[in-house]
Image (cartoon, rainbow, N blue to C red; front, side, top):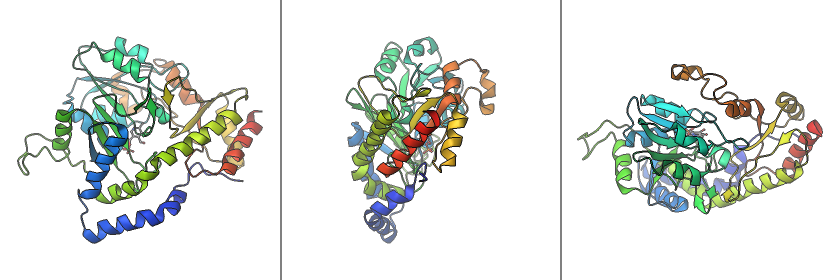
Length: 368
Ligand SMILES: Cc1ncc(COP(=O)(O)O)c(C=O)c1O
């Protein structure tokens, strides 16, 4: 039996009757920009995350860019972050002329090693940007402790993959000055296109986000700063609103799949399963294992029609686009090793039980 790495058509088929009416409502009312769906989604998700404010934006990347703009990040400023993630956080830092300062990842996990943060802080540091990778919170107690005695250093969380994850009872996105989420279709809460949101508890920061998301205009047509158009589309907000009541069950289903894999693959030599320290409640936007002979496992899965994916094949510090930063191969050996060993197995909410069994059987066959 073949198993897709993910299949977005299943979620749409299951929720079509809830999604179509809200799409029709936007089209019939032609409230395509702003409007009640955007406002209601902001309020509902702020509540879900446990913060006072949220601003809907055009993508997860723009959530990061807007947050860094609202922080007034300037050329020469530094932001401490991880070299093992998607390019978006680093791209956003670089687009403002600032400099990402990398710290390596945890020895076993995939998030930044918070014990290295203090050493990376300097006079030019303006922010620490932890990424809650694969749906697991970064060690936020240590991250917050590391910046406690560093006035002027903000924490901006990237929870693109971690909406619904929590650490010590607090939701991802509620620890720092801002939390940035993505609604890319394969994320925990996925739109039918691009979208994102910034969460914050800080009223003044919220006002800056709103100002800059509307070309820095206050009042309309009077521009006090250079911002941009970062609006969340009303159609996407409507679709997300229809899906939001199901977010909890999406997350639970991902956790159930992960629990199944954890058990079914527990005793395989040569395979490291995702682990999390006490206090974490991950949401498994990806289920990522480590395996020394990855190419062989991929080939075996492929031969059985089972999808898998490599997040991420190359660390950020050796990317050609970041050459000017002067990093070299060898600088972050844990991140580099992860890039050689990681493999994500199918884990979307609508994955069937027989499909996950087929995945586990194929992995066992390949490595057993
Ligand atoms: C960790 C991380 N950060 C940021 C982003 C950017 O989100 P978007 O694709 O919505 O711009 C992604 C999306 O893939 C991501 O995985």
